[in-house]
Image: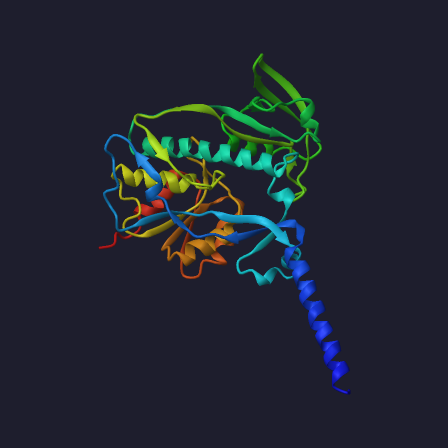
Length: 338
């Protein structure tokens, strides 16, 4: 009898622990979890018309994606149980006023746009006749709870900020950097009925109280005319961050040995002027690139992304770039493998 009760108590405690762990594992939390995916070679995804093909097959260009899903309560309490994981609130992954389904639709549109941009930037850098027109920052979504909802609508195109011209989303972000939270910003916008000017109040970013926001999500307004077709099939991957990798592989397909026989991982959103914009999930993408045995990883120079990548890079070299031309220059300085 002396052993029976302690064993029953122990068994009950074990059962309680198992039930508790099961509840914590299956119950969702309010956060999302970012996890490393597997680095994917870009070469099979891209077809370039006009009998252009990859002539150098020793090297590889990889694009990097991040697995994103709702976190479980157990992962919230013990984030270290998932290697390479980062927990983030939904507000960091979804645009203001946009639900999960709406955000996925926005990300899908951005992936389509990134393909057009990558083709235009790469072929222009390779010397082909490409006509590019950048006409402003098109509004993709407006936070209905923000003051901007009283003044701006989806598909409106922002062409100026406080009198300074805006041709790209990057120029919009640069001009907004001079605005203090709480100030009104004067926006020149193009609407179906013509050009007009509106004064929109700003508010502080949750992540950086010194950063003024309007409450909108934008993409590139403009047009691209290519000399021959370029087709990219990214599968289920969405978002714009594969643009740099796509452009590098297109260069390879038209006969430029940009990887110089090495494994190159690249991440970064491209603009039509060749600028490389910051992206998310740097930690996870660096782990992916390292696991793939990449010799070098190209990351955007903004937002200290190179410093974040180097924490997880191991022996892999990390190079920060502001533009596609800078990325090409960084690769041309690599010694070519035999």
